[in-house]
Length: 226
Image (cartoon, rainbow, N blue to C red; front, side, top):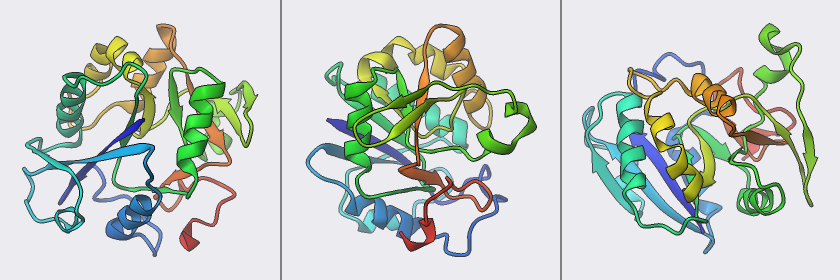
């Protein structure tokens, strides 16, 4: 079972100035995501009420948990603590998703394929374009792993949209908490730290999801058509 926890809010200062494609629309992105669901997933929306109580998700016939955060990091902190308190199976997959991520149909099977055939701790379906052009990554070396239908690469870090087994999440719970104590979660530093203490992270390529920022779309996919 993949247990999806997606964070929503009416306004986030963390994303207020991000450059978006012309076709960017959070409700359309959500509707597209929901259409991909099947009986292998369980979805919960985690809504931060502090900056407003009106949102399209309240018209979507989904499970919603309301909380008060007021910042991206506080919202993520609340979600981490909520999930930690649940009585899930150790092998259930926890998928934390931000509200500006677009997914390809078929992502569920690809994610399960990764978990079943690789055995890594953390997974992302986002192929970060910055890993291919930023000077800080010019000497980056990755291990390439082939599964039945795609390739995966080890990668230093990702955003706060990632998946892991519940037992992995519980093992590194305090490590996650320490990086979401400011206004925004220090996701890059968080995954660098996890690598340093023996964990790991892989991303599939080509991607099955993308962060919808104008200059940060995963390559080789026509995302605007999705």
